[in-house]
Length: 195
Ligand code: S3P
Image 1 (cartoon, rainbow, N blue to C red):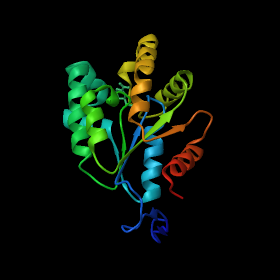
Image 2: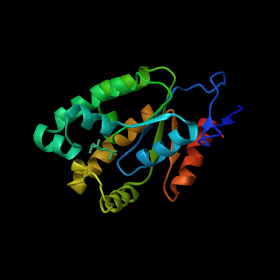
Image 3: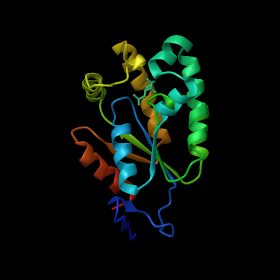
């Protein structure tokens, strides 16, 4: 596929007539898998829009993710998540980072599988790696708390329960363990057949 670098931004632009089959690239995986970090870089690389589904949920809920969990409860968080996902999938030239729990809902899985021209890239790593990344991210300034990590044993149960859901939804799977964000981005581009 021939791709033009945008002279102003340096982003690689996928020409409209090119044979790239996708209009939406969705990143899925457990917390700490790199969905937001890689999603932003992927969107920059393509010159596409980036959306973090948690940000869309916060807009809909009018408060932060931890406050939605605290004040409205997880079922309401999940309801808002489905509403935000429905709206997001209406956009094209979009890179969308899901929250780690989004694939647990059958409605969300149906939405993702039923939206044409949508690739779902599963970023995978062992539980220990993911938890370690989440702990170091929690130390970063401005980090958002992850309520479902409060209990490590329950978090591991979620991880185990979700593994087959992520895999079942994925059109592409990329192992992130031992890879820097740049290396992971290269692997994602390779998996998608993009230079
Ligand atoms: C959740 C993951 C979070 C966020 C919320 C619940 C989960 O997103 O949606 O805290 O259930 O795994 P990230 O995977 O982006 O951290």
